[in-house]
Image 1 (cartoon, rainbow, N blue to C red):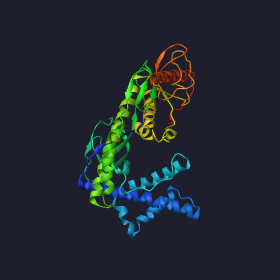
Image 2 (cartoon, one colour):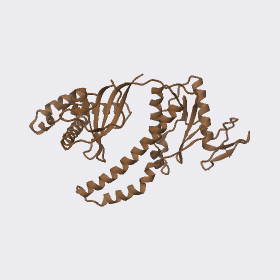
Image 3 (cartoon, rainbow, N blue to C red):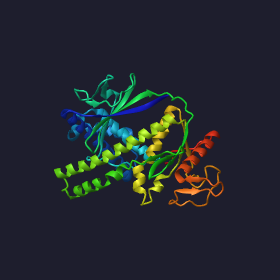
Image 4 (cartoon, one colour):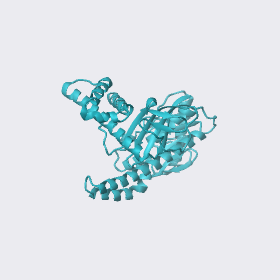
Length: 377
């Protein structure tokens, strides 16, 4: 199966490379914001639609003006790609997949995309346009030999770390078939409860750093705007957020990969996360759990490796239904963690019983050939 796969690495630029990247980020950000303002004003003032080709022509004219000659000091590819990203943002907005595009901030995450004409990749080193030396990349894993690198996206996060994402044309093969099947019930106290009875603890990355983060944010609020001390305090806050996001992403990838490797069929309950986050008491914990990202990873990994992922309707009474006899109780308050079936007398752990019911429902859906989309998360 041919796929597009991105390999992301951290790298450490030289002082000269850092200057070039800072200029490139600034030019790409300026082009994006300038053309966003151009398109917005054209619509609201003259009811005129401006597309990618018009913004590209406007950028060419802009580079010829003396006050914007600095746009020519960097590679033209990342600046041009910024206009393509803007076009994609508007396409997503008109298709109601995203909100109206926002202006990019100077103190936010920075990125620049290079296509094949703007970088050199020899299989061992990566050199970007306008740079004399290759990037000092920390190779945490190997890129498959013969894989064609189509684009490279260089980014700098708010914690000051540089990363490069290399998009490749790759081939994956289905994993060897497995007789194992599993149902997953997602939770907050326990991130996931499996139909096998295993309970996987939630990482609670944000909760663990919440007090430290609150302390650093209070210090940041007291610093004078524009001062060097404020920049230092802001960097400390960003580093805590980055560490939390990294630990969460690492946990989700390890768990999703393990489940894909061990099971042929995975059944999971579909949840409306956006609606659940309206609960003020649970919103922070739900966001920290990142269920949507977990299901996203399960979805594409199942497609890659020939596994079956089945989503169960969110209204399916998995917790209230006895997994032994099928009897369904009328009510099951959240504080009830174990219960006894009135019909068959089976004693159930609430979450394990729900996971078993999710698996049974998923197998029924799979057997009848019905299509259920788990990505309603």
